[in-house]
Length: 438
Image (tube, helix red, strand yellow):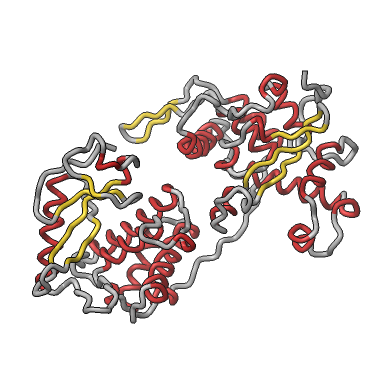
């Protein structure tokens, strides 16, 4: 992303969203700001009519100077015409246009002007996904010949909701996609009502969510190993329209194996490092990895507050780690998968798309996805737990045990050391090599 161009124009400034500093001519030092360029925005400043020096501000969407000037002029016009409501003394400013309220909600999700105890620390990916769904709603308004420049948050009615419902059905046949859009609009209006004091109705609550039923999502050993065998740089280019994309990456097999043998989410496997592996003597027994999703949901950012998962080093995982150099790399701060790749976030999306691409090459009459590896692991884990119930469970509802009583490190060690008849194994194929760390 290129830096914003600054030219002197009344009411226009560049502001850093992280440190709230104003940036003008000296962009080399950025006014003392050291944050990334993508955290800077154009901001409009308009003097409130008949108020003397009182002013109202707005973060602009534009990232091109000419577009920012136009957006500023339009905003200033709306203020002067009264379309933008000006707060009276002692009153809270509440913009009425839906585009302004959406921008305010995105700022809230981005922790801009949010008290420390209320910050959510959402990822850029999450915020971008919310912004995309907002844009889909604005696209819907455009298809309905409704100007977003004049549409207010109070203009929602049942007739419009019915057409938005139909719009979502055409947008995607996925119930998950449908529900995500509805949940966002519900949360958006709840934020306006509960946090900002808007006297409006949360009409999106009247839209019923679609059922999100579970499905058979296990992977057989034959499918798993056939997939690994077919992954190759040969015939690995996918063409969609005029766009060609090479779907092969030299770290794919490692990523798929690590996910299969740990059962963790994509975000976690690409953050796994060798120093997360814990030993008893020379034997690796478990891997301590942050539960990234739970930590984000519960806003647990301090190390002492974080939730961790203790992944047992089962036979298949141990063999994989030995093959990847466990003896030489143990206790190092190096990533297990593709240690030289810096952009870890992009690997998540690439791996899922490549998984689907190469599986299609097997010419099965069904499709499976990368997240099925996690489902398969959890399924086998449940079967193992059922067989070992008397050894690792003490309550009929294991959720109670798991939350309040179980020492996960002890369980992980037990599973790791169990090499008996009912041992934990995800995909059995090759004979296991003797334990070694030398």
